[in-house]
Image (cartoon, rainbow, N blue to C red; front, side):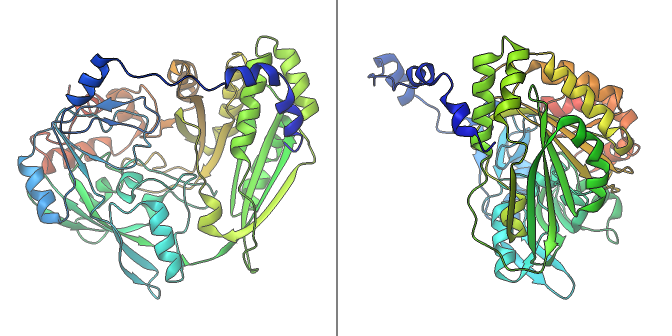
Length: 463
């Protein structure tokens, strides 16, 4: 939105009043006393603040031997914790939290073989920088790179690209530490069933301590961003997805516009560029909602006049610098992966549902992901389209599960494991052809259910 400054000027007096700093206050004695009495073990909460727990113990093991000892003896349920970027209840436990932050770093790389081995606690952002330093790069990245490798694989974290799979599909070997005290090295050749289950495990099999991934030489991408009327963009999506290495789009509810984004490999050097204006655009959309949400026709009319259809951005840089971005604005999110031939139809229904509400403003994110064969991968056996819907962290979000979730169901959507959903064990069994096989392997590796918090027990039908 190149006319952003004009939009920000609307209602400036009211916004200024709302943003006046609050007077500092001394906390009451009761609050100070409560702070002094806080438990020695810190309370955990996820990035958005939606989920929280008070574990009995919070451990940061420095070796696989320490992890194995904790798996056998620490208070259950045991759950691994990374960046807290999941919105589902995968982490909360009254037992033990395990952080893998000390099991991190690039341990080995082989440019000729195209592989790299990391401690599973390595953050994606750190992994990208470590690979870049040795002339390598990941094949693809999600739009946020704060996650640990272990967490990203466990939840089937993905980027976009019609011919590019999710991150777990690039794994060639995993080291899995189980509650039975075993250290299992697994791959397609060695312990193949354990590997197929551990690629996307929800942290239910034990602790993945090491990951070997396929990598490639570092490369430069050119990103292009431009605006299109919504209907024109929806008509162009299949062609754009087929023509570009990576394509995604964001539909802007209540505006009649969407943004198309492509990334293609180029043989030119990186160029200096400013940070993407994503946060500015999001603030503008929220201001427009706050000022004109009660008058949808006027809201649409104003958006049509202040969105510049000629807006176009072009940026060239190393792949890892363009594919992942920072997300300062906190939100809650639902996301589902539907068969590719149903992607546009589902997207249309989601947009229509959001535009029936006057409180929505977040863009809808629409991406492409290639099929793989991991047992609990949402992309198992089918090329997919991913549709993500967000709500501000301090605003109601129940409609994400109830209303948007109903649309996903109609299109055979498989929920993102780290995002909000209410699918039952019976539904998941229907959606995943290898669901029973995963449960069989899980019960073998963790016969006492030490990795199962209440959420996973319900999800797996063990409650």
